[in-house]
Image (cartoon, rainbow, N blue to C red; front, side, top):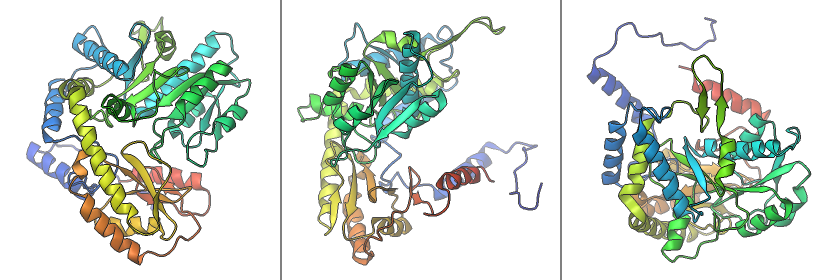
Length: 444
């Protein structure tokens, strides 16, 4: 080991007693974000204690099962099929034509949708080289990651003044190799929904696919619409939409590691699959990127939908919107603060013409509040859940006190880290800084 190498833990020779393992595991949580008391405004989506207890019980019952094998564990095959059918119904799909699968999260779901569109185009005779997609800059980076891995061109298009996809700019970016357009319902940064109906028409006009990333809003917007709240169209009721992704571990209130990727036509789903014949271990077929898939996650996601039902989700989302309104009104009562765009649900961002909001976030973090920073423009990001009901008033008070002390905007944005409650140094090679940051995460 070199003198500069970090100390490494060796593999334990003798195992520790159960009590000591639990003590150490719980001690490690001491510096984790305090989401249990509503002081974290992202990452954790939680309904209530009763719901959590049910999910844990069901997860434990299927803790060892492996969805790799539908023949060994037919219960998991049935649960996954049930989940796909229920979410397709929620999103207004044609039950006789549509199809989908589960996945481990939004990134895998989006990746699979991009792969399906690419492989369909290749099967139709398109040359693999030069195939690409057109995305607004607010589209989730999972699209870009998929393009990188799959060897596809990615054209990122600036958004409109409303922070939504610019139809004319998207149209101008479509080229001979374009096979897919991307959109969000809503986009993660600002909670605004792209003009899906117009993008669907654009996709039809150019005979390309349209994938809608509704990982955040698929459950929320669909349920609110059925409850009579005006919501923009975004799913399979829009002509031109060929695929939609919706996370169960966000506002589906399922366990972490559960999502769905859904297709208007199940024929497109076949291009998501992978098969290999002739392997000595046996002929292989896999619906998603993963081989082994944890049965507990699938079972608990099934339990979440089955337990809550439409009525349960409706009650939860009405509560969340009431909390969201209270939080927004409190923040906007602070001079200089404003919403970024027109958010459609309980995900939104706040910026300021008078205050350095990243400085405010730094100060609030010292008081135990966890807020995501964003850039272009500088703003702070909020995802509201039922557990925030008693947090709004003290948070707004803390925010107001910090704003009274905050300097004006510096005019120089610090690069914000997605999901990390932090910023980078605005100097040098930012890609190298990010790679170094990942490296350090694995230091002992």
